[in-house]
Length: 331
Picture 1 (tube, rainbow, N blue to C red):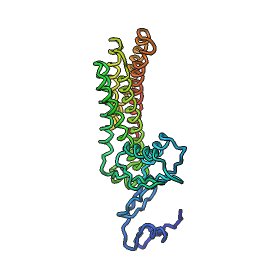
Picture 2: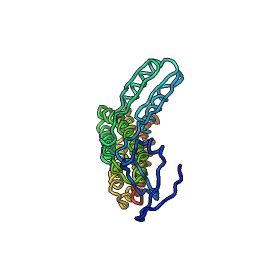
Picture 3: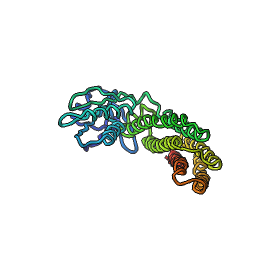
């Protein structure tokens, strides 16, 4: 940090000098152009035409690192916005660890292995954030989870295990989009220039969007789990229980559609109706549990209970999405 005195010219305008080493570091010279912006009470000066520096992250591993920890580390580096993740070992990376790395890369949009040696693997991200419309990608993500829940419910009612399996696999694949959305959002939070290029001019807006993406991610997770539990259901539930699950899924889907619309359109009244609908979901959930426990053996009732619990989880995070909409209105 430097402290400089604000001075005036003969014409009455104000000037301030910039440290010489800063100018050199940014590649500026006399006559060069800079942007000047007023942002939250701060004067921001930045060079015109400058490029964002490549973000790199080293990741050291050893023989004790298991598959889950390795995948989580690579995924976290990706979501945090690093362009390069260099996985290193003091000795040789084990063949199974290299296989784990390749499998982790398959679950990340735009990442490829650019270099591979006995003791290191370099992962490079090729995603251009400006190629993605954040709002449209969020809409696609929400629509995918709605479709997964809809098909899982249809599969339960019809006893179609293949449809349930298909819904589960689509739900699992949607995690790739979730990670991409989180990456884009966090990059926008950290980089003012990128926000401007993404046409998001308020850091508060991108912060609230990040919260909404997080809630949409939980909705997608529970939709995937509902499909999984439908696939695991061994016998057709009682007609009354099926009717309750169908109503619960329909109410929850309507809540999600309204919550997302409320968020995108900054509609406070619509967000309020979503929050109020949670009482109906709770009543249906309790009725399903009571009906299942009375008529089914504990082991046979477990998948149905998990299905109902999963739908209730979706409804809960839909309310959280409605809360995000309220924050967006007053942001």
